[in-house]
Figure 1: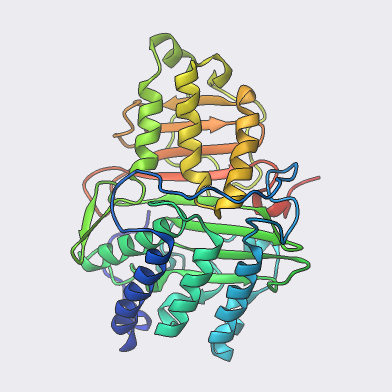
Figure 2 (figure 1 turned 60 degrees about the vertical axis):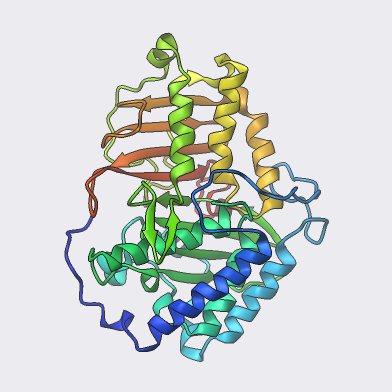
Length: 387
């Protein structure tokens, strides 16, 4: 993690930014109201029933335009966001669809990465209307559950605003995030919606009108404990962390011995730049050996990450992972309480790769989680994968 200290970020302090942030909050509230979301710490899942589109063999919707297919709205809102930008902003937004650009995501804030970090458009340059258009796009491309998908992203942005407010540095805040279209959004051909910043990476890859890759998907948060910001309470990664703690706590002594790894971890194994570097042999305890209750807890932990994707595709992806559960393994390192720096947990399947580690304290006095969801077959929509 980068060195502490306030950074000189004059470009994030344009006169319109505070006004835009207030209008942003109002626009998010309007979108959240329409989706049935609230900014709270509840882990209750209020997700509506997903669409009935038939999944393809890779776990995504088999064909665009079917019942529950989100792509028409995503494409329409991508075009609307692009149209709302200035010529200069569009030039920053539209980037070549290459593996170099797609894999250029990180867990660190943009100010620390400098010119070598994330391509795309700085959100600190957006006007009120442009924020509205971006939020509409994100709402179409992500899940509608409480503390999942769209709601979770908004809370992540608020968490970074919170860090800025408490004096962690001027380089924090939603203005330090970036959005990019890698390739041109279109009913045909391939492109990626890339959105991210400190502790957040969204990588949705589309081809011929369908989602073909929802990973890498990174989520971290500091603080993990609920925090207050402008009169509301937020804890966007609390339920993900608790799901892993509950799962590990369910293991008996013999199961813990089988699941424990010898390796120690300072960060997630499949971190930025570690693309397609999945271990050849799974480690830990076979999920097939677990009780029905424990298998349900494995699915619950997975679900909290998959549901960050639009509802219809999330249902298809989750069905694929459930079908591979007997070939999936659970492992951990450190304490099963996931409270100390270096505590680590992993779910490793034929397709699924999901891991969380407790990172050392940085702006707070407690460790905080870093988690990454990868897919061994559809990371980046397959872009950059060795044949």
